[in-house]
Image (tube, rainbow, N blue to C red; front, side):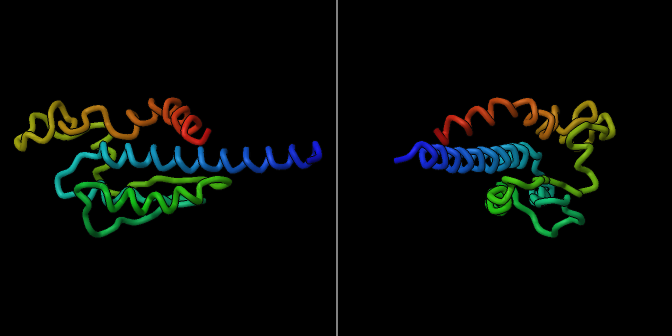
Amino acid sequence: MSFSLDIRKFAEKSAANTNDVIAGTCLDLSRRIILRTPVDTGQARWNWQASISNPATGKLSGNDKSGAKRISEVSVTSANAPGNIFFLTNNMPYINKLEYGGYPSPSSTGKTASGYSTQAPSGMVRVTIREFNSIVDKQVADVK
């Protein structure tokens, strides 16, 4: 085998590994955010929309209390993330309150405390973003 052929094979394998890391990272970030989203009716979980190049607009009708259906759909989009801009968008009108708080206090429903959802008082996205480096490290280890 020639040196140039060895280099070409290495470059092809590296590109494939990089693509796997990118797709896996997008999926894992999305999965964690979806599963951390508080559930009442399941509409907030259902409305995490993955897209390429542009953020999704509009709301989806339906619900997904477990998050399994939404994660399955996001996995298809995350496979196309390498070389593109990947978006995970939620257009539910109350998603910012779930992330940052702002519910009336005191709560008569017991679902909020001090203005925050009792299911995700520190949010979903912020918690997951803090884990970004460890998620990438895991993806890199998995493709080796």
